[in-house]
Length: 130
Image 1 (cartoon, rainbow, N blue to C red):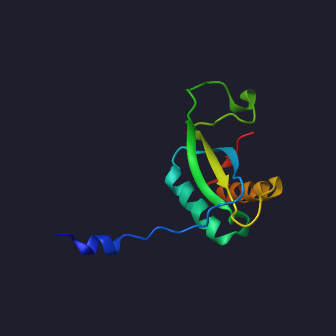
Image 2 (cartoon, one colour):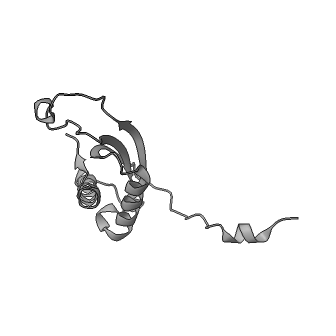
Image 3 (tube, rainbow, N blue to C red):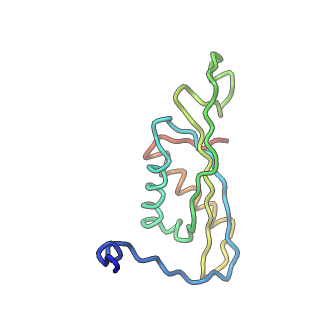
């Protein structure tokens, strides 16, 4: 006997064409508030990918590193522009871009990265780690 209702409630997988072209990867590190969780960032990127044509080739987004600094009494200005302030963390995210119709250029990848950087800055006050 099989329960049919749970099977019907489940979303169907999205069918995609097999890509003929190599994917492009970009690794980007953001500095943001400790209170912002990755699920919120991933949701914002997902929503943006459906609304912004620059992200039409976005195939995958993965968090691969989180860095939280040790407590330090040294002022951030002395440490440098990449210094994490109190209650900040660095999140490194890998973006995979792949189009099934055409090869992607570095310009395409740069435009996608710019779209994400702008959105995360606007929504979460995140800044790109240099």
